[in-house]
Length: 612
Image (cartoon, rainbow, N blue to C red; front, side, top):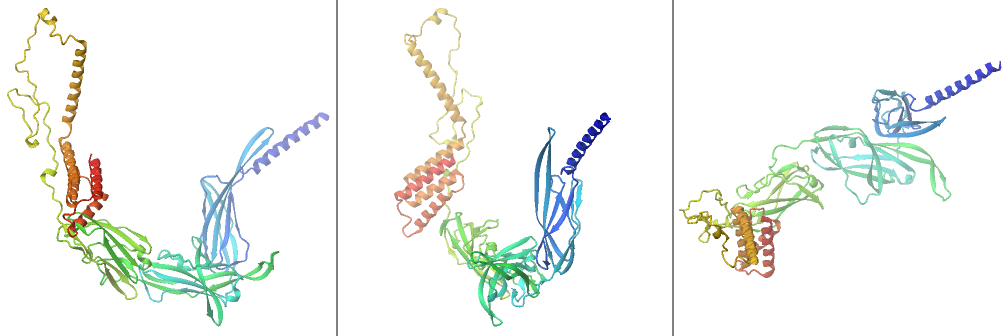
């Protein structure tokens, strides 16, 4: 009997242990099935006030992030605002055995904005990941309508006349608040359907140093905070504080746009309490709604008739173009750097420079003009462009007026402004003679058969001072082999019997071999490079011996032509100074002073270094 009782007790212990293990496995997050739940913030909920929703998904893997799908609500807008994953691990030790578990949770944050009052149904949400899936239930929200405030008003002020594509106009949003409500209104939230039309309009928000308040606008991509100003104004016999938000609007395409009214929801405190420090804190508030009237905005295209060649799409009230050149005295082919500054209204930052040849600008017969587009930089309320041109002949006397055109929406016509001409003095380019041009000298073949009866030839282009190459010849040499031992053992002289003299002879032999190697290396050098280097040094010496500014600049130009490299910018500036001084009264015979000579020599040395 006792034995049977002992067996039953052992069986119960094993059953309890097995039940405990099963319970632990069922409680483990790894063993739990995928699940999802949906919850919303506490109400009441109102039209135009965002409702924050959260979908919690559990039982999924840490990666990849699960996909979530939901049908669009019928009477509102649902937007995903963020995903917050969280992972936690735990370690358990039971009967000496360690087990590790991981708990993964994804929180999907949503914002729902109701458009009409009544009961709204949201969901279900479906979450999937690598074959795993879970769904939430449906959520029913009761959306109430906020009472409209009769004392406050909201105004979206748009231009009365039709707009033109590309025209930049100010758009103002005004919120009028009675002065006695100051300090009782909290959490204002704006909804402006016009600001949602990013497919048809572009908005620019200039900085306003007088801004003293920030207004929050709810958009499809989330809330946006914009600065606004405040001033006082009388309305309906009552003093009001007017909060004004100003944006710059640019239409992108034509059309007639029916805009829903702008609206605002704000909390109005109706009960207060005071802290220990005497500060008033609202304990109860009621929501109030302020709404504008629906509006229509018409956008028209630019007219084709009368469009100037220098028009690049800029629309505005007025512009001015200024042109300056970095030099006024040049030679044919010298670079002339033009600086163009465009001034006008705020839209100047997006202005594009027209072709320099437009509307009788630069002539391709007079100037070499770059083909690429000229990029500008917007600074200090103006846009700056830089371009390099070159005069093609001596008949060029000025940079002609350059044109810039725009469309004036007030006058409903195209307008054109022109810059002032820039006087130029163009003289002939420096002519490089045949002596300054370096040509390749063909190298004589090294394996040429030597004719003992033929005199060594010379290079006819090398000049009278060129040396002839010595020709090795064995004519007249005694090549007989002697077998007389006494003659072979007989010393040739007492001088060669000296060991020191023999060492000197060996040293001279090594020196001759070294000189031969150097001569061979020099013979293998490119004759054209040697001639170019010699010509550069000759021009460098001419810079040293120059007595006038004209002689120094001419020698430097010959160095540039001989070197065959692009004209350095610092040398370009120096030559421009030389040309300006040379064209001044009495400049042709102006003596080269020491500072100018030092600069010329430094530039010549730099050219010599870059050429080698």
